[in-house]
Amino acid sequence: MKDYIFKERIRGFADLCEKKKIKYKLVLHEDLEYISPQMLKNSDGAALLSEQLAPLFFHLLKTYGLKVPDNIRLISADGTSFCEDFIPKISTADHPFRRIALNCYSGLTKMIAESNTEFAFIKLKPTVTYRDTL
Image (cartoon, rainbow, N blue to C red; front, top):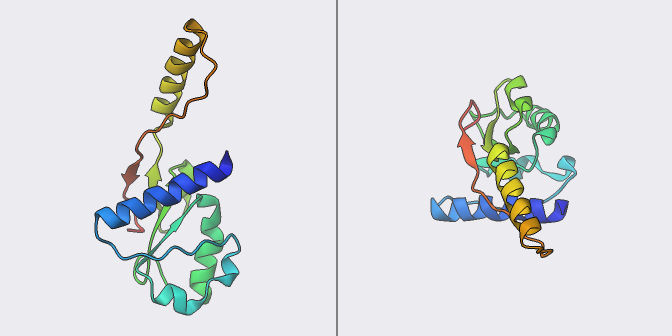
């Protein structure tokens, strides 16, 4: 399930960039030390799949002499309160957790009432919370 969520996040990021005609290059790597200074200097921005990667990413940028948002813009997924703890505060693609929970509840109630055991995905579009990194 985790792989599905990450793939959907990546697809959403790519779709948004294409819709807004933003040039992007996906660099998929869990180990941030493999991201070169040149790769970052040639980029306008970065998207983290989790704000848990932010401390490592900020350290990497500092090592390369880069600053957010002066040299590179940053957005992360999830929108947890963790994003407020950074300087600069991280902009996020927020998932509407309350709406997701309500839709899950409604869907499960309907499945039980109809004796339906078929699995269904619930997709809701995230919203962007603009903070200091965009």
